[in-house]
Length: 357
Image 1 (cartoon, helix red, strand yellow):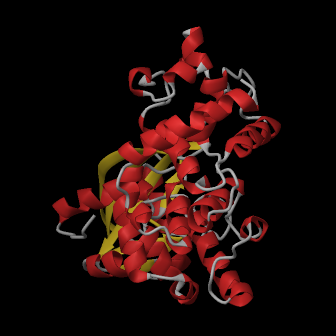
Image 2 (cartoon, rainbow, N blue to C red):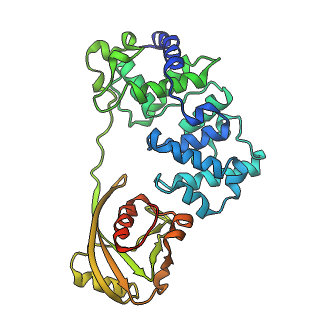
Image 3 (cartoon, rainbow, N blue to C red):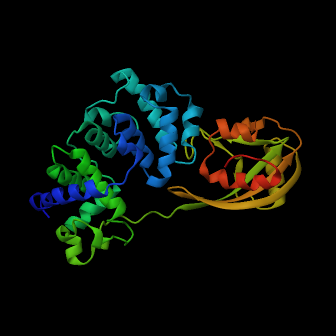
């Protein structure tokens, strides 16, 4: 499908969007800051999951200045449970630069937006087109899927050159008077109708008669992408150290997976009680009682954790190896704990330890 024929999608797509667009908090008031925060939150996260986080984040940090001046524990706590914490760290870094370079207002230039930490071509395009009306494409996974199905394009979308070609296709048909609405319409179509994993709702699609993939009878063949690498599986023992209604937390290294976040102490490849006792001693603690409790699995991009938890009463709350001992209230208010560990806090309720997780 060449640029001339793909231009036929503009009018029906915009008409469909006006009638069917979901009411979302960031769409009601699409200021640059709100669009930026929502787009970063929506990366690799479902819309329904983002809504309460967005509302809470904007209430606590309503503008660039508030975000730039926020303490790390504040914005990490607001992000708790969303995962991919580098996103919020980059938000903070970018906010500081926006205060320094642009007086607290997100720049109106696509290239300047692109220069900020954590903002790639898609996010820069979304902010520029939705908040500022600049005619630049915003191509995410939804848009890649829609365009490759519309054009029956068998190219591998894992290839950066292919993504650039699709961006140019979208750019060639962007309506100058409604670039933000058009970009959102493509995203919305991919999110609600042109679904992934062999589930497109072609009967409800406003572009069905213009879709080459539908005409060929194989829209599910598109998009074509490289096979995912097999995740590495790690067996981890999670150590729930308890003393006088306090739970031990440990801060992870500043680089690598979950960099710099608080965690429940854990060790690789421990299974026997003897190994657990040795691990407790290695943490500089003395166990009064050890009980095997819950199990859980957590999937990261390239690693899969299979976790077994051990509830361990210790003699004294020593701050060895950087342990931080917290009450349920302190954990609720101050400390951001990655989602991987949250199932084990529910188990602790049966042990008389309460937190609102």
